[in-house]
Image 1 (cartoon, rainbow, N blue to C red):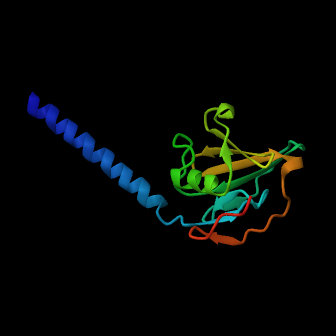
Image 2 (cartoon, rainbow, N blue to C red):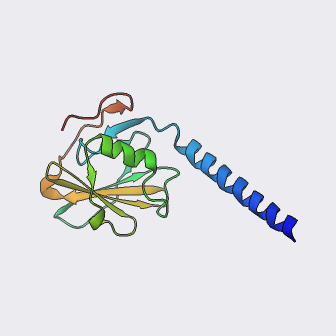
Length: 146
């Protein structure tokens, strides 16, 4: 019986390690970011693709980005959350609910929700920067000045 428990624990440890490696590998090529289409000061992984999904609230600017490997239950991958912080955004953990994460910078608020295969950004219309350029910014470069 003890040998069976030991094998199970060993199997579980190997499974967790492999899962972490696969998850890390899936996001290891994410080394460049661009400004989002609603605020150029908020980073989006360059591999994320904006999709046109209608949103009917006139006071809110909303954008959806398709991205492989992102999951609602995992929330924002660590590499992405770290990059958001590097760009000067602070997380407002009191406003966080489920898959919703809230970031603030210079009086602006950006809401991020994760889903299976995509994530969304939304903010009040008055704080959005319409038509923000999507010039690539590689990870080694400095984030935008505050």
